[in-house]
Length: 193
Image (cartoon, rainbow, N blue to C red; front, side, top):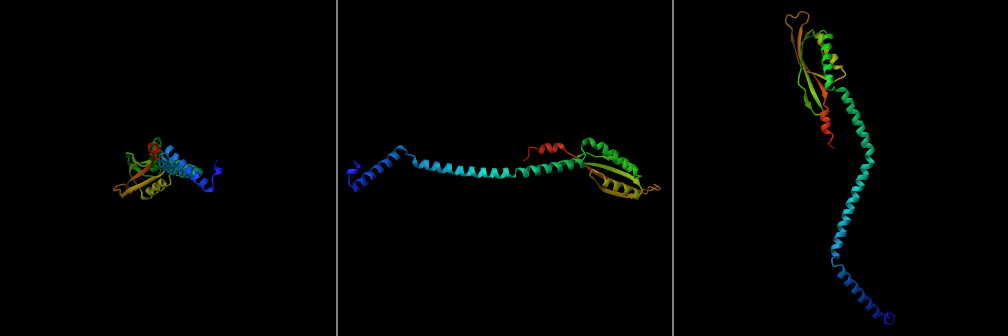
């Protein structure tokens, strides 16, 4: 039937059909603009998720590097644990310091282990000492302490003469501080990223 109409009639019929289809579309889909906004929102969310996926893939590529770093840090922690005694080893350390004073020809006048003071992942363990001996013997003692496998700091060193001490001419008091590994601090850090 459309073929019998002249060309301009066919164009008019097609325009009328197109207008009817657009009207029908608006009638059937009255919220077409809302769909467009929803489509834009979904496209934005999709782009954000794609960016997160790319970021996750970049992190995944760095995973072996992170694992190597963790292994390195665990080795360093093992080294620190070798240097820092743990609680049960402190008795051995105290005996070692007392024996070292005896071997260095120092008379140990007082020997007072102090209370442990927590600091980050370790505790300070101060030992107040008073010794009497010769200057050279004190130097030998301090040299041996410095070469011990554990970290021991000697501070607050005060020296004076030992009146009436004969050959033992000096009196010295100082604090020998060693450090004890605090595994409770490490457990507290396990949940920290």
